[in-house]
Figure (cartoon, rainbow, N blue to C red):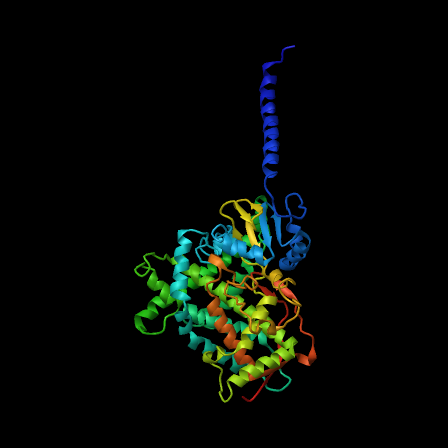
Length: 503
């Protein structure tokens, strides 16, 4: 029996559809048989492995790595993500195939806060990123420039010491040392980047609170990045409006600072230059051949706050917390600092180069508590072989679990213990060459501000243990619970009894 024409019009698309399914299944199977993907936990429909991240992703991913290995493939919603938890995998991503993994995945929140991701940290790989990184490395954060801000570091650290001493009106006075450390880092970064400390009473803008909001948003989980068809939820939960408001407030603040600098420079030639002064000189492109637009200038300034203030504060807070929990290490550090500065009223940066135990304490703190437990994600620009065997497709994200590497028993003896002595007479450093200790990352995407951060941390820590004896209030056990955001901070305030000592 002949079929009507209308049936033919239905059967032809049906046959084509069936053919495409068979074709897809056949070729997908034959292709995947020849490639080896990293082991992967079972994923759920739509959300993939998102449910396995937990409230502290670095810990959850570390636990998963014990089952699936130091290289895992997760699917966070629609995004394939490699989790690297070993030195070998970190080295392969950040050194062997550094150029392949040199870009960043796109983030709508970062785009709106950083003027279309025109900063150094989040900018996608390409000529623009090369130019702005060159500006930052050569003009803002080279060794000579970092040393030129020595007076700022010493003045602000002295101010902090004075404020702590003022709060010690008796041997039992409890102070929030974390607040002092936060003010120190904020004040140093403000003076270095913008020329002065901007307080709310003068400007009417709560700058410190605004920067806290910026950091909070950078650490916020954005469901729309991983499951695009759910991005409408950001309108319901208020995330879109929060990002819009913070971006607007930051832009208005930075515009006011820039206008203030333009006026100031007309009447104060010869004063020491801050980051903004240098960037304004570069704007015309005469020094670099690369004209720097105003939005790029503002994005770079925000980088210095987001990357500097929170990282330095977090590192100091964790380090002091560990020293308080380990009185013997505290005493050893105090003996070194006080011994090397005997007869001097102040520790200077010239004294720091001889303090080996100080550097060991900082390294041990970075090992146990890297401020960025998970390094900022990278994204592959092409297909690549990881560790010579795993096939990683283009546009796969890679996250290095620095926290897990710092606790690897194959690398560290008794890895959960705070033992600065392990770094004495050790060549391991945190400059990105030793992948056992990479708190600042490594390779092209390594943090360019590490030298500046270490200069602040070393001086602040040395002066604190030089001027005070510290104890916990009423011999309480210090709460080391973590909370996560763009950095991994301690959750509780650092309450201490600080007793001035004669030096």
